[in-house]
Length: 225
Image (cartoon, rainbow, N blue to C red; front, side):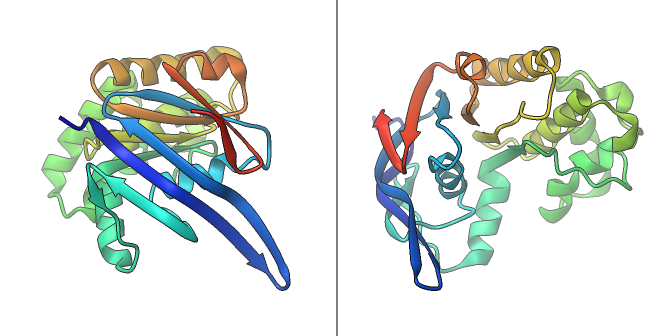
């Protein structure tokens, strides 16, 4: 039985600016299996964030194919891709991306609003996910009333509300002190033990060590896989 969740085949990404072409990814092939905890590591400008954006269907390769659970992804219908992302992929970013004028709970349930889930049900799910990251007592707090580590835990809870099989995290500890970073990585470890596939972008070796598999990228090419 094929256990591949994601398969990227000969993916190249070229950005064009006037007469200049920049090759951010160069013929990258990659397979990620269900239940893996993968860290993608590389220096600034190596192509790691471009790779994550393609894996998360936020950007498309200039050339190459993408398969999810064995089915080829077609990029033409953005509306269908958005629906697919909302259900299949949870995103966690370095900057938290919380809306400042709504409570933690309301931030967490935003993906459920987009999915058309009724209010009572989405609030119940939101509280369950806040409990999963240890912040159910902060449901009615606003982002500016929370520490950076707490804001990132809220962002993780938001990524979990649709119960996606994959969590993509782009430098999720980049703005945090080491103690807070360890709390966040412990949450990712627990999520992985519960069956979530975790794909983590980082440039920090101590963060990459939490993953079960390390992929290094340099100048747009994988140097180990």
